[in-house]
Image (cartoon, rainbow, N blue to C red; front, side):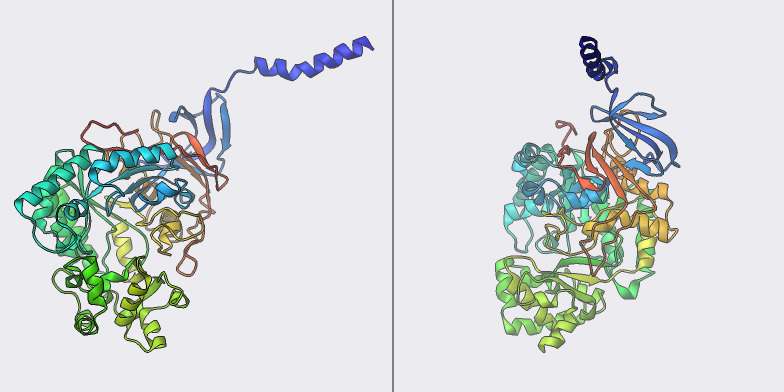
Length: 546
């Protein structure tokens, strides 16, 4: 009996003895047997990837064990995708999980078309809040030249005095010193549209002192596309800054097949003479924005409140309707005209129970149903939805032009969408557009798998190595020893964007694992709850990029 007890005791201690003699894991994570795409456009290689202390420790055949082992047999292993045109600055303060971004394989977002949700001097506090609360993706932001303008001279039209322009420049300098990547403009929207080329050159020169960008939603993306591209290049050339053209598109049906090649040629000519200009795009034929763009810019010349009063004036509406019917005018890009009429403008979100039944219907259809002029319908919905911004989908692009732009080596990918506060619901902009859930998987599913427009290696380069290089993120965007471990593992056969116009919040398929700064944040397609994202600071060399 005693011998039996001794034997049982020895056997029960055996696992502890074996564990004591087993060496500790050499790595935090080892991804095994994957097809590794390095992000630089090179063909994939069969390799393992080891991660330790938030960085890629080794790529190759790895004998050492990982505390976590991931079998990537038959899967592709790539750097995490970089969203070059993100809108998540505000929502990350409410919910840092950014699950719709992660489900697309996105690990880094560059936000700030309208600037951060903070004044220039308060950007450090904004960053600290995000760091304290935690975010699941890496986040960087631009500062908007319009923020500086509004702070100095309000939201109306008019030219700044020399003193006012100097004051705007000081705001830009503060923002750059506090970590902004550059300045932005959104010249289709008042009050940004009231800024002149000269004003923007002056502010760009300030950003240039910190090696910053001038990133722009151009003044015209329709009939005047080429002139708008030329203006962006002029600002970059005279201001001494890099130029990023947001969501490059040829949104003008009569110009399909003509305007985009001309715009591409203009950019290539500028690059040939040394202007650092490039662009990003989202792969959809409809843009999404507010109904306020249907009103001519003069409506907003004295600020938002005066503009709302004008929209309520029946006599002024008659003038406005005539101008909508006439097409674009100086200082105003008419998106109804660019879309080919109200039949191609669909109500996406009216923020009103009254108009909810008409979501997904064109303004022409809604006008017919209500026996109202479609322009009146647009402005009625806008007023009814206040203080929210009612939005529509403007079908104004062609697949041919998307393909032309996508083939350019200097084009990267930007969703123009925000993270969703709650996964499966609209993004924080309140815009049910499939780009919020499908942009990055669609690049591969549509333009690599369904149509041979891009190679897989180049598609991944456009979403990883190229944008990282573009933004100066020297330790991200590639799977190489010492790089930050932002990694996505996907099943190419299953990869699909899924989200469409009828079901815009559908989750993509095929993205299985997402690692952010060495932490598994998406596992088996599900958010782990981890918040390992970092705030990325550009600045004037004073603030390092984590």
